[in-house]
Length: 500
Image (cartoon, rainbow, N blue to C red; front, side, top):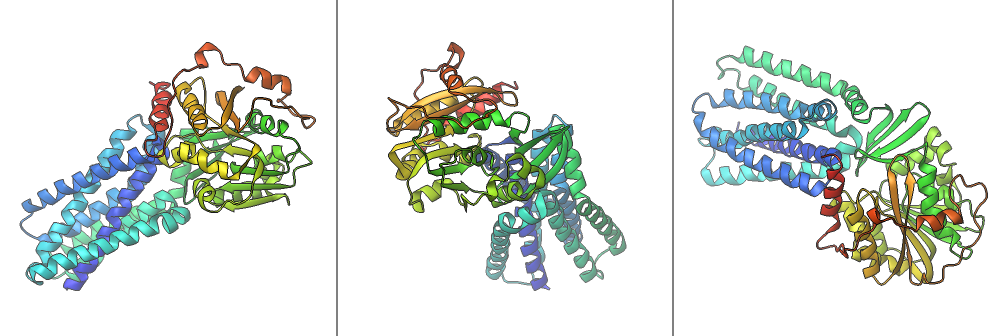
C-alpha cells in the first residue's frame, strides 16, 4: 500500500506545481512583468502551503477520507483556476484579488496533502525511509512538471486545458483511492458521488476550454477573435473589427492593420533611405513580416536575415491567408532567411556576418525577459555585426506617454559609444510613437532615394519627425544595464500612470 501512497505524492506534487505555474504564467500574460508576477505568486503559494501544513495537525481522525476530499477540492480549485482567472479579467475589476485568493486556496489544500500522507504512512515505513521517499517523489514530480509545462503542456494544450487536465489527475487519484480503501471508508458511496461529480465538471471544462477562452478574450479585446493560441513563449491573439485586424501578444497590442503602415514605414525607411545601396539586412524581432515587406521595396537588397524567438508567430504570418495578404507574402520571399533564436543569445554566440542595415522591432520592455534586449550589453553585442557604415533603428516606445523610458533607451545606446538620432511619429492605434536611429557616425547622414508610392513616409516628414516639443524632451541620463534593468520600473510606472 505504501507504494501506492508514494505514487500519490508524485501525482500531487506534479499537480501542485502545475497550478502554481499556470497562475504565474497567466498573471504575466495579463498583467506583464513576469518577474514580479512569478515572484509574488510563488511567494503567496509557498506561504499558503505553510498554512495548510499547519492546519493539517487539526485533522486527527479518518485521515484517508479527509485526504480524498482534499484531493477532490484541490482538483476543482486548481483545475478551474485558469478558466476563472480568464473570465474574471474580462468581466471583473477584481482580478488581482481573485488571482491571489485562488493561489491562497490552492496552496492551503496542497499544503495539507504531504503532512497527511506522512501521517498515513508513519506506521508502515520507518521514519528515515519515510522522509527520504516522500521528498524524493515530491521533487521528482516537481521536476517533471517544470519541464513538461513550457515544452509540451502550454504549446499543445493551452493554460486552461492544462490546469483542467491536472485537476482531473487529482480527482482521478481520489476515485482510485476510494476504490482501493473502500472497506476502510465510512461513506465510500458518498465520496464516489462527490468525486465523480467533480470529474464530470472538469471534463466539461476541458471540452469547452476553447469556448471559455474565446468568450473571456472577446470581452478583454472588445473585438471578434479569429485566432488564438499559446506558443512556448507567449499568448498570440488575432482579432478582427470590421475590416481591420489586430495582433496581441500577451495582451499587448502589436499592430492594427488600419495604420500599421505608418508604424512600419517610419521604422524601416529612415534607416534604409540613409544607407548607400543596402544589400545585406538584419531584422531582429518582426516575426509578422511587415518590416520585411517594407525592406523588399528596395530592389538592391539581396539578403535579409530575420531573427525571431517564436516560430509559431512566424508560421502564422507566413501561412495564414489573411496575414500573408497583409505582409505581401514577405516571409516566403527567396531573399529571406529566418532564424528561430533569442536575439540576445544569437548575437553573443552565433552571429557572424556584417550587415548594412539593422531593423530592431522588439515588443515594448514590459518585463525583464524583454528588457535584456534594451540593455547596454545588448547594444555592445550588436556592434559585432555592424561596420563603421552600418545604420540601425529600434522602436523605442512612446516619447509622450513613456518619456523617461524613451530617453533611457536613447541614453543606453549612447553609452555603448554609438551616435543616435531620436525621432517620433503619430500612429493612431498607439498614439505618439518613438524610434531611435543609430550608428557609429551620423554627423553627415546622406539621403538616398525612396521607393515609390509609400503611403506615409517621406524625407520631408523625417525632418519633422526629429523635432521634439517640450513635453517630449527629457534631460535624465539613465542607462539600462543587464544587472539593474532600470528601464523596466520606469516603463511600468509611466504606462500604469495612464490608467490611474
